Amino acid sequence: MSPFLRLGSALLAGILFGLGLSVAQMIDPAKVINFLNILGDWDPSLAFVMAGGLAVNAAITPLILKRKRPLLAEHFRLPEKQEIDGRIIVGGIIFGAGWGIAGYCPGPMITSLSFANADILTVVAAFLVGTVGTRAFLAYKG
Image 1 (cartoon, rainbow, N blue to C red):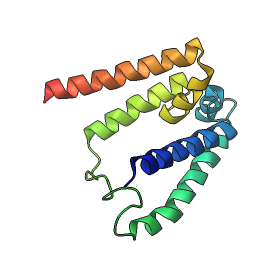
Image 2 (image 1 turned 45 degrees about the horizontal axis):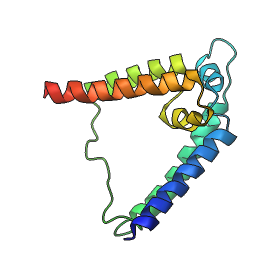
Image 3 (image 1 turned 90 degrees about the horizontal axis):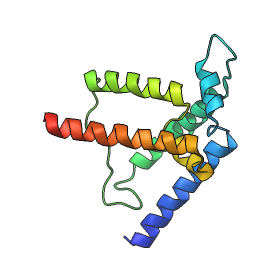
């Protein structure tokens, strides 16, 4: 498999993802915060973006998984863990709190780096501290 082809396809997928987030205005934290504010000025547009992504994924993933192997990799890398445990629940709660406070989840956060203002740089720095801190904690723990 050509590294150029693999990197090119990753670049194309990233561009498509970033373009979709930008067109849908999901890089605007106010859109996310207004979606989460169901008792205030609620904006349901994020639900339509999520539903669109879910519909495309639900339609195409079964077709892809019928193949013996991916087009650009040696084998499929599917999650091995399928049970819901304490880490999933606590992680989801922490993620949701951060998402609600900042108005960004990782995809839109990275897409918003194109603005390079103090707000997004602070959010990205905090994201990195949280991610690296968690990895260090889990490595230390066990």
